[in-house]
Image: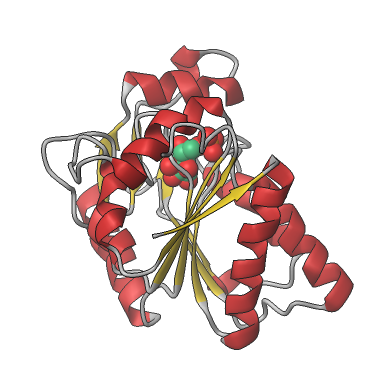
Length: 242
Ligand code: F6R
């Protein structure tokens, strides 16, 4: 693991954007795995700026998002489909047909998980996966568990995750209880991974990811076994690292 500690949230986004931009420059038809949430917003803003100012070209790029809430249609402003449009896709020249997220409206989530995995494989697999991390060390929506879930699957969100995500909703009771998420194997199959975190409330999770035992109780800890992970964190999120 490479650890990059920055002195601000914006610089965390800048470092991450540099890695993503480098990937796209070197391989214009890259397959990117993407995350939602507050953490990657500065990275998306920076990438959009690089697209605008120096023409970073996303026209051949394919993206697969980590997850989506179950029961949320893409036009719901709280859906991850909507989030990605607003925060990234509408600011770059990606082709709509090259954008994939799990379908939270699918009737059969097992079939949807299989469909999503097949799509990723058909596109040649993920070149670079961007991850945030939950306070409970989840990646995607792989919550602490007794085993690592392998592929894209339905998950029941932890109370801690529901509370954390309630900031995007009128109240915690409105946060969906279920999501569909890439699994740990899906994430670990990516060629390169970057894990982003900022803020003191992520310090424990970052410690577990980088220094803790590899255990499904702290799903991000599995990344210690990946051959190419960069952990990009601000000083607050890095504060418990030795
Ligand atoms: C989002 C995702 C989650 C978030 C994590 C952190 O697609 O998969 O793992 O990355 O919950 O969320 P924020 O960045 O809002 O703190």
